[in-house]
Each structure stands twice: as structure tokens, then as C-alpha cells.
Image (cartoon, rainbow, N blue to C red; front, side, top):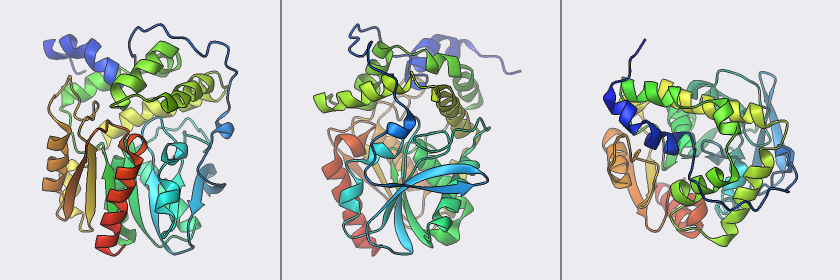
Length: 328
């Protein structure tokens, strides 16, 4: 068994605040009396359809003109298709756009499977086939970026391009770091987060500048935590962390031949991991561009990890400009 050295003991508490979402110690309980919320109540940018992949129901939103080529949005860890609410309509004005809930998330089924990046990539591909999408530009945020990279490597014949928004999979972790991160997360820990800890995560880790309209995300998360489905969702979140660590893609990125756009917020507080590695988000973006043959990087100022939600006008403009330039 791997034995942690002193480095991982020293950084343990700090790193856990980033990767396990333990948050801070504020006292601002606004939603103590808020009722439970089911995942079926989540607000989405458009009507929800379902595909069946090996008996698992996978929810997706399909907007824009019908076409066999589509822009496909893949959410990050802990998210769902509702997190694209400020992007989908703008992108769907001239293009077919799908947003998929990965199994375990949002309105999709929540089986207690040993999720992996390969499993998620193949689920995405099955949904696209059932929706009649022949070729796709995948837009992956955070964990969704690593899912998208895995899909591109497994299904290159269907890839028209990739847009990676603050993607996981570029920053790499050595054996000790990965072992520590796996050991630091659990379903119980995630389920027992307090409202203060949830609030701290959103305000300090995910967004650069907090706005009153983001408060709905905290309320939604608190209410979902009271749902009977929440344990299965928490399982998916924890397994998602394991899957990212267990399914590295960085050494294979040279095989991706389609055009790629990498987007990062200048003020991303999650990537690179500030306690394990430190450094600037631009450094990870430049690392991606150096590893992927036909990639380019665009940085968005005044944006944290949730750049597509925090600066949607800039994000949408960058995506549409790149799609137009590439004829996609």
C-alpha cells in the first residue's frame, strides 16, 4: 500500500478544501427551512429528452436547427445541464446544440456504478447516435473537458472539434498526490456538507466575483441535499474524482488531430490545484496547447472556474467566433 510522505500530511487539510468541498466557517444559514428538491425539478434551458444507454436513462436538451452535426455541452463535476443556462440559447441561434446530463447527474438515472472517463465518453457517444448526431464539437467544462478528451481519443471519426473550458485532464498528479486525493473524498463527507461549506465553495473556489443572482445555485444545492436521490448523486461525484485520477489522457493528446479551443478564466481558483501545485491557469492552458497539435488558447478576464456561467457573453462570443473561423 502506498504510504503518504510528509508533504501530503502537511497539505492535506488545505487540499481537501479544494477537492472535497469542505469549505469555510461562515454562519449564513438562509435555507434551513427550504423544502427538499428532486432532481426532476431542476430548471433547464429547454425541453428534456431521454436516451437509454444499457438500461440507464440519460437526459439531454436538444435545441437549434436540426442537423447531423452538433455542438454538444458536457458539464463538470457536480453540475448538470442547467449550468449551461446562459450559453445554450446563444449558441443554438445558428447551430444545433445538445447538453447532456452524465449518468449520476441532473435528471439522468443515478446507478451506483464504478464510473470511469471511458464509460462517460461512450455514454456521450451513444446519446449522440440515438439523437442522430453524426459529427460533433464537444464543449466540456472541467471534468467534462476530460470526458470530451477521452471521447475524442476513443471516437475520433465522429469528432469535428473540441472546446475545453477550464478542463481537467491537462494538470497531472503523481502517484502520491493521486493517492491522497482518492483517500480524501467520501460519499458521507459530501452528503454532510453544511450550507456554510457549500457557500464557501461557490464563493471562494468556483466564482471570481460573487453576484446576488448566483444565490439560487446555493439554494438549489441545499434543497437537493434533502432529496432521497442525493446519496446516489454524491456517489457519482466521488466516483467522478476517482475517474479523473484513474483515467489520465495527457500523454495521448498528441493523437488529437481536430481543431481545439482551450478557454480559461484568468482567476480560476481550482486549476491548477493551488495547494498541490500552485501557478496560474494560463500555464495549464499553455500546457494543453503544447500537447494538442491544432489547439489555441483564449483567456477570459474577471472569470473564475465557472467561466461559462460567470462571463457568458465573453464565453459565448469566444465559442461562436472560433466555430465560425473553423467553419464548424
